[in-house]
Image (cartoon, rainbow, N blue to C red):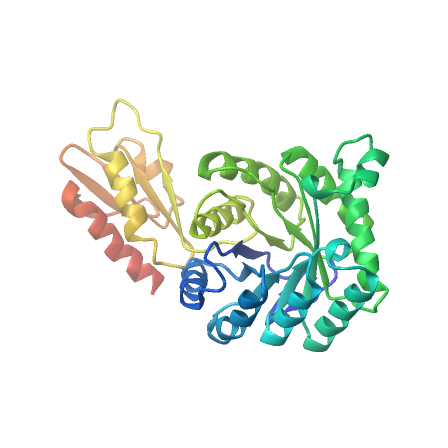
Length: 348
């Protein structure tokens, strides 16, 4: 088990639930846009939100954003240690920095001291695309798992030398198996909490697949304290994917899980359309429910017996059931609404 640290009101590590993180794509200098995005991802289940802080104007905007944000915020800082101090003064719960590029040991010490005084956490990270030349050369010119861990350890030691311990670590590669190997090696090396993610994973399809494989393996092994599914897509999609991965790995559940059959020649109704409508109608429910959308009444209720609710299509109408027990029938145009009504009863 990892040690426990604090990130705002959240406890990270030490057996706490794995927290879902994403990063805004809105310009931090645009307070209204940044806040709107923070609120939108929070509504979907984001528990930590990171914002880019590229300049002083962005750092100055953080104060207003922090005051209105419903979740702990992390400032993403590179190269300018003064931006880290400004972000801490604005009240962020944490920093994402690389002590190696923040301006040297003395400036790292000042950032760590300020973070300690503010009660903020610091996340240090090692990415396969940003390892130093000497480190890469020592590992055969490749960003191996060992190289990632060595880089992260060096950054942690810089902070530890100042007495700072409220640290979280990430080791990310665009190579899924290298990411898995690095996370496993870190778990054997240190008890600092881990933030899991596959970096530069790709668009919604490829990025979700890569993240599901890599994060799924690690989560199933009990590793990981926070996660981010990095996608070339809006941050809302990252949050949705993260919760699906957590649920599939058996670590956490939130909202409605839709299970549906792959369809076959017995299906006589608009299964694809109904599955999409049901998913849309139930998206606002945050209580964990399992809802089945099945293509026929031959096997539907039986195959989905463990679902809290479900529907199975027939010719011209469909059967609504709960735990395999029939509740009634409705026409295709009324099925999704009738199912939503039953789901709201359960959620309440």
